[in-house]
Length: 376
Image (cartoon, rainbow, N blue to C red):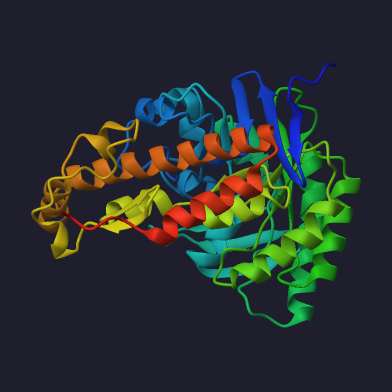
């Protein structure tokens, strides 16, 4: 059977790659940023707006969707694409990170994890097979293996045990996923900040011949340099012909540096969460609209942006919305932030194609360092 899920590298610049993931519901241009649609929605945005910004793929959260409204209900209603009116590719995480971070009274065993919902206290069991079943009911195009996420810092023996368990769970997820030529299951490299454990995990997952690979367990407070060292130990051990996804990262600078080390896909709540808390991302750096200095500033966030939220509203008005707690403030700033992030990814793709990612990254950092201009 011919595989309709494919990945092509179209250009390289050092370790950075410009590529395309093709699947029946659409093509994902890489490097790609996936807005987080935790409960079937990208917070404070219409999904047609998200698409218009240049978004090829969004992320859905297995843990939250299995609790509300329930995977079986979503399946009866036509799957997550139909339910949320997003006919384009969707990646779902396995639910493992949220089980570890949100659920109460969790217990991890070889069979899987038992946990009590943070929503209503009901007890659930999540095995590798059940995680894949839920993601299948949601009809996700890319499905992630169930893994154990260890809170860092942690003793090496605990990190190694969790990494080995995650590898065994990956094998079970692969078996449960089966042969689906139109979709993909990704394995997740674990191993904390230990380069040897990361390399071992990457090599073992590579031997499973999956369609893609993720680096998990980072963006949990470690210094950026530590994260980059983990990527330098991990990416060379992963197949060059498969997409690589860095989970939960990150800032624009994190993305630039991670692309330079061979990462193709990113997701993070940062741009949407920041928008709901009065923070705007722009090509001149971050702007905190809570600050009183914006109260009488008639300028837009960025007069050169293609996004109406960035160029069509004064900072004074945005400051007023934020200070007043108006929902429109969160909507406009989230719109601006996602526009900035998708513009960043398009800029990165162009730079990789031209063989000048390093130069373009330096130009961006210089502009960030100069900061936003004060009001006249």
